[in-house]
Length: 395
Image (cartoon, rainbow, N blue to C red; front, side, top):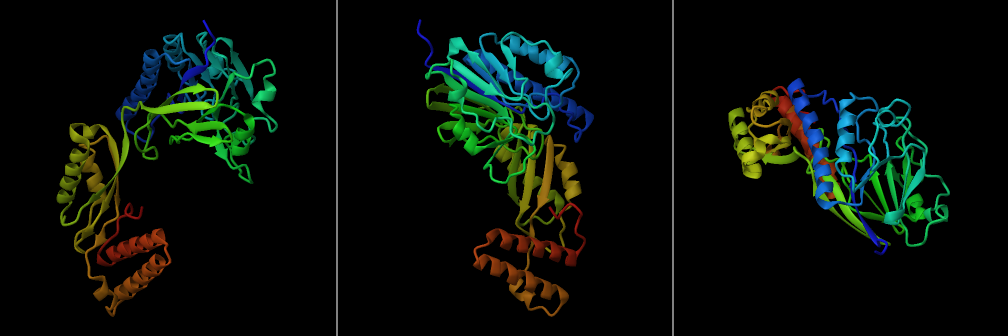
């Protein structure tokens, strides 16, 4: 039987098992902790089905280095259920390794390797693969874990040229020029110099498409399950295959619940009940019968009459009866003839004229974002003229 010419892997990171979800009610927090663990088990089930050679976990498997013993014990039992897959873990800033921390105190199955040094490697002879990585020993690591002069081919004199080389690491990719980062800065030039076939990275919760630094392919897999409104969209892991200088990966969704952004027009709505019904109608149209399981960032757009004010607090409360969680942002504008308003001999007219002129100037200069910002300021200002602006409107 010949030696393998390629290996298959699952690249995951940032599970944050044991998260407190302190921003949620006690019931919902417990629900999310269970869902977080189920997403982890979903990745284990993927490994059972696909039998990859490696499960690469690039940091923050746990949300804290000290957690109730049941959590790491359950994780260890799950790893033991995939004995034909090597599990390689690089501790991150949330789960650094040190004496009596989770990685140090838990007994791990023989198929699990946890990096404990600043930078080291392990050679899997039967897979013709060497995997490099390093561990966080503190929540912040401002200096790079990868040595400045590291080149993988020079460091593995005992390996033959056909050996595959991988990197598993938690950190922040940077240009390397004057950037001050606190979570293991990984410069693109160093990745290119390393000569690695693939770098499985963690720390950034938004997955990135595979990119290249020199001949090294690298990517962030993102988090397998979102934990809040700053982690929008479908989440998951990467599954891939590597032959020498040939990397193929695909995204595999794993999340149980999504946080989704959605813009909704409330044109012609003149009561808060109408706005609520419009939102629920759009959510059902977009998400079908299962729309209620997800959380949403809803941006309300369109024009409303000057005597109607969207009550965001009431709307938030009403929507929580139909969806898991919600954040509502009011970007509506007041329905007015702005050309007439600008000629009005009043403080309101002068205000409208100044903001409209500034928006026109920015748009003419090609600064669309600045123009929109001016129009948003105009809308909020006019609402203040017509009535009270709620504290949560200026978002």
